[in-house]
Image (cartoon, rainbow, N blue to C red):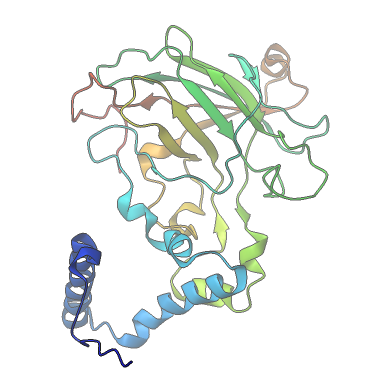
Length: 295
């Protein structure tokens, strides 16, 4: 028996109207760039080829690969609150150690890097402290690797831990100062460095510390990264040149005075960093006026 299918038939139940609108808006934007900036199809192919190279050689899903270039478009923060990436990081591992407050992230006895003493507060849109907020904190080691992701002999909980804010919403922990790094899985892709350079990007990520912040009063959990002011990698970040707005960049101070070093309990120079999170709770206003620099 032969079945005849109407070639013009589309199951309306499968249509995603938002996706349709997105594609149309994307084409309109490209057309405007074509007319106003002289954009060519070859120009678009440069970005498309970079995504293809990474996807084909790493096996990562194409939507995940596209996040590298476009995720910052969907980043929050336009309401005055601390911008949240709002996505799950591939480097996050659940079940980190409780390190106390103040605490020290688990690390090897000979962990390379400059000690970093981090402090700050978590407050709501009224400036009131959020007590008992859980901060999951983690970062890459000095060689750019995250613990627990590779069979490299590094303890699974290295530079990973969580703590809870005190009655003043304050938190304090000690770690090592992160450095810029490039993902070895990406750098191994043939031609990817040249493709990234064509887009004005480095294969490196700027130094950063990951946070996930959870509390019953928060509208949504905060997920993202805190960077460091003056890092020259930020403007050419492989994941996005505008991913680290000024409101996500913290000041650091280098301490080299022997007396200060001794009082802090270190044996050599160390750095301090302060960063406050302003997060929206169920009783917070929709928008606030940021107290610090904004994106």
